[in-house]
Image (tube, rainbow, N blue to C red; front, side):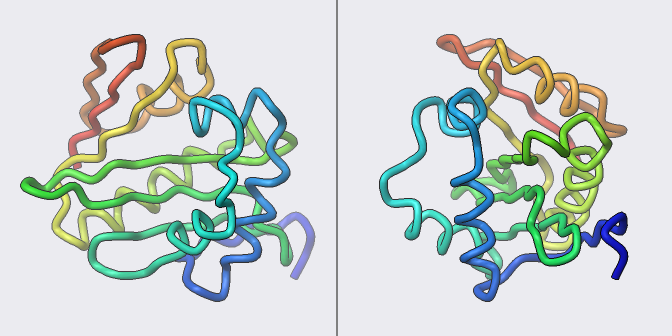
Length: 155
C-alpha cells in the first residue's frame, strides 16, 4: 500500500492500541478541544470503549499505511434515535479533507444502525471543527448552551 493512500474502515477491538496512540499524540490544544480538558488518565479504558463494535457504539478510522491518523465515533443515546458523535484527526493531517470523509462514513454507519441525528458538543473556539460540521452536506443546526456549541446533524 502506498503511503499516500488513506483507507477508511470501521474500527474494532484489534484497533485499541492504534486508538490509544492517536490520542496520545494529540498536543495540549487538540486534547482540550477533544476532551474539553487534558487527556484522560484512563486512556487505555477509553481506547477500548472507543473501539467497541456493537449496535450502540461505532467508530470509523482513517489509516495511512499502518498508522491511524483520524477517527470518528458515535455512542447511541438512550430514549431517542440520536447518537453523540466525536471526531479527531492528527495535527499534520488536518485541513486535508480527512475529517470530512470520516464524518461521511460515520453518518452512513449511523443511518445503517437506525440513528436519525448525530449530536456533537464543540467548544466555540474550535473553529476548524465547527466549520467541518457546519459545512457537511446534511441539514445542520447549532445552538450555544453553557459555553458549548451543540451541533445537530440530521441524517
